[in-house]
Amino acid sequence: MTVRIDEAKVFEIIEAKHPKVVLVNAPGGLLRQTKELMEKVKSKYGVKGILSGDSCFGICDTVDDDVEKLQADLAFHIGHNAAVTEVGDYTYLIDAVDDVEFREVVDTAVETLAQFKRIGLATFSQHLHELKPVREQLEGKGFQVVVGRGNSLMLEGQVFGCDFSTPFPIRDQVDAFAFLGESEFHAVGLALATGKPTFMLDPYMNEVTDMKAAAEERRKRSILAVYKALDARVFGVVTGLKEGQKMLGRSRWISKRLEMNGRKVVELAMRDVTPERLAPHREIEAFVQTACPRISVDGFTFDRPVLSIPQADALVALMEGREPGEFLERSKWIELTVGLIKK
Ligand code: SF4
Image (cartoon, rainbow, N blue to C red; front, side, top):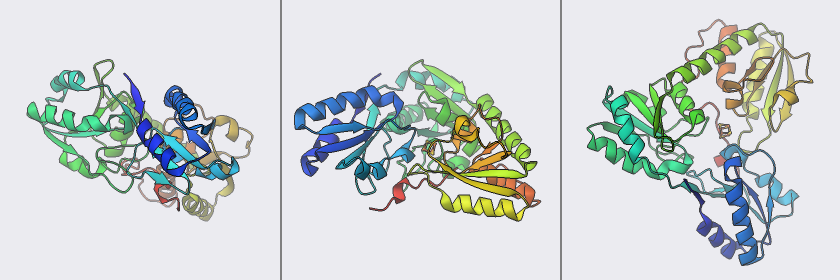
C-alpha cells in the first residue's frame, strides 16, 4: 500500500501564491509522507514549513485561525479530500490517495453479499477512486449497485466519521452496504447511521467483516449513557474549539433545554475533549459535548456519561416525555462547519 499526497497541487499553489512560510497539518497516518513533502517544498522553493502538532483526526481540524498567529502565508490541510478545496482565508485542502486495489477482496465478498440483491457502496477519502471499478465488478456479478450522490461538502459515496449524508438518502434503495477500506471506525458509523447490514471490505487482509456486532455494541453503550445521564442534576456542556466543529448554537440550545428541565449547567469550551480535561470538574455528573460525536460513541475511557449531539437530543426527548427513537440513525451526527468558514 502506498498513500500518495497530491504533490502537484501543492507545487501549483506555491508557484501561484509565492508563500514564504506555510503551516501544514495532517492526520497521524500521513505524517511521514507530509514531512517528506515539506522537505521537498523547502529544497525546491525555499519555503519554510511549520507542522501543526495539534491533533488532526478529520476535516474539522483545519488550522486557518493559526496562520496569522504563526505569521505564515497559507495553510495546507492534508488527506481529507472533499467537495470543498479551500477553507477560510488561507487554507487549501490537499488530497491523498491510497493505491491499493479492491478487486481481490470484492471477489472474496461476493459469497457473503449473495444474500442481498441491492448493494450500496461507501468509502472514505483515500479510496474514493475505487468506487467506480468496484461498482463495475459487482454489477458484473449480477448485483444492483447504488452510490449516494455528493453534496456541498461530500464527494459521491464518501463518508466521514460523523457525516453519512451520501449513503443515508439511499438506505431504502439498498439491502446492505459494502464499505471499502480497512476502517472499523467508518464502517461502524455507516452501520449505525443507516441501520442497514454493513460489511467492511479490507483490501490489505482480503477480509470481509460484518459490522453488526460492533455496531450493536456501540448502539447499546450510547443508549446506556443517555439513561445514565437522565439521573444527573449537574451537566457540563462542552463546545469544541476546533474550527470545523464549532457548534455554539447547539450548545446553547442544549443548555437551555437542560435548564428548562431543572438541571444546572456549567458551560465549558476546549479543543480536545479527553478524560484528563474533564476530570477536574468533579461536581459535574454528566457531560454533553457538541464537538466530535465519535468522542462519545467510541469513547471507552470516560468515568461519567459524555453525550454527543444525537444522544443529547435523545436525552431531551426523554426529559420531555417523548420517545427518543433510533437517535443515531440520521444523515449527520454533527453539522460540520468546515465548508462554512468565511473567506
Ligand atoms: S467531527 Fe467528524 S470529521 Fe471531525 S474528527 Fe469527528 S468524525 Fe471526524
